[in-house]
Length: 151
Image 1 (cartoon, rainbow, N blue to C red):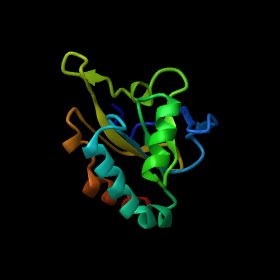
Image 2 (cartoon, helix red, strand yellow; image 1 turned 90 degrees about the horizontal axis):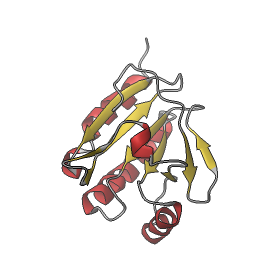
Image 3 (cartoon, rainbow, N blue to C red; image 1 turned 90 degrees about the vertical axis):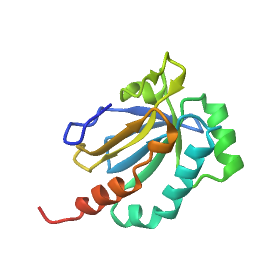
């Protein structure tokens, strides 16, 4: 998993329409769901939606990454009216690209989030094997607030 202060990897993922999404041009928060069927992860996405105005005011684009294929991601996004772009990998999963490998005998997909500033530096990174610990709402809020703080 990435660490705060490290340069963000040059990620190119794919949205649910099949368009490439390059993540190097703006500040972003990328939340990695364990799966689209995970009820805890879905609650975390709801929390992100509740905080959307704060992210927007800070110039942070919110994105959701899922390990499933594009068709599954598109169906889930439409069914649940997800207000954010939902991304999949173009070769491998988005999770693998940032070091969120499977854990516990490769049975559990790790989940978490990364916040990257407009200069491409990771400002917050958090992950967990169990989805209940994968969303650090307070840590993300503090990191987003620090983006606008004077240097």
